[in-house]
Image (cartoon, rainbow, N blue to C red; front, side, top):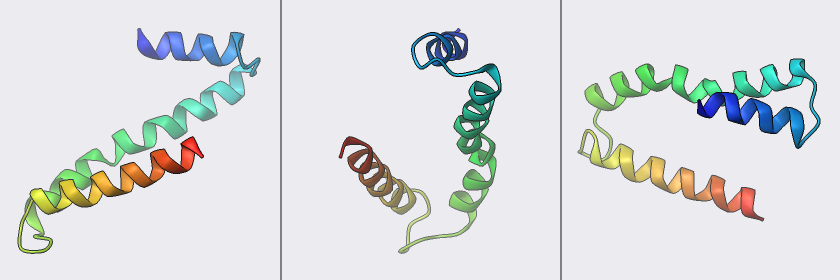
Length: 72
């Protein structure tokens, strides 16, 4: 249901054509496609001596920087 409302928002509010909406939906779905690869790497390759905790911290910093760049 969330995907349907997001597509409607893109079409109604931003006045995008259906082709552009599909391209945006594909870009939004890229992180979910890479989730399996990220899980395998974080479970098997230690980073800074820890397997999951360090990946969580590194990804949190990256997410914070991305959100700040979007805000500015």
